[in-house]
Image 1: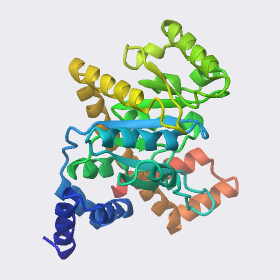
Image 2: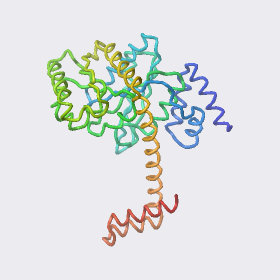
Image 3: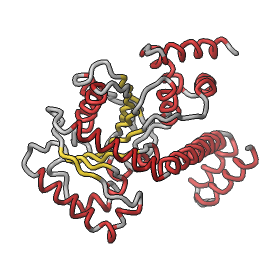
Length: 324
């Protein structure tokens, strides 16, 4: 074992003993990728364990982070050891991210492990490093694992593939439920939370959700799991309803575990991760090809109108396949 690998093994032992700094350093290695991330992956192993992965999603401003903070507090009060990955969007200009959701959570559930992670341009609202980080958190003894996503609207679909249970948070004034269904948000949800339930319009929001669920046989909402998502009213400023949300999450987990759906979802998740990693590798290889002399010549030909983009792409793909 290399010196780095030995150091990682020590960090992993300390992380399992509850040392937050060691766990944070390991996650940083996973985020950076390369050999250091590979060594962590070998130490953790491919087994994701039994930790329940919960996705929390919804439009910006719905109160996801504040609600997640109260979920953490409720879980800690039950003697459980939750952890959160708060995913923030990276700037398309600078590549940076605010990584500020943990501020809201720490003010409610101090002592819980909360890690912010940037999407680094990954579409769908999730960072590429999320799956191996979840395995690391489970290996360190955290359960459940909450992934709180960016809230980027219609492309917020990766969360359904990354989580065992998906929680959709909406708020009064969130808009027409039909539009939300068209955006693909409702069909992802296993638990629905109407947040800011003390505000005018909260009952209207719940009524709209109930209506869309009643029409599920027409709209296709039942296709994901065949069961009706539970709707919970909550107030993230006070924590009211957080316990009910936890109970709804646990009930969904128990139901899909008993039916065998949990195992099927996790198998699909592992296959999806393989596909994502292959796509990432092919994209990186294509960038290398385009940066080389022949690749630049192809781009010049496209610019000059001597070759179509489709022809150039086909040539790049032939080169990628030949160099694989």
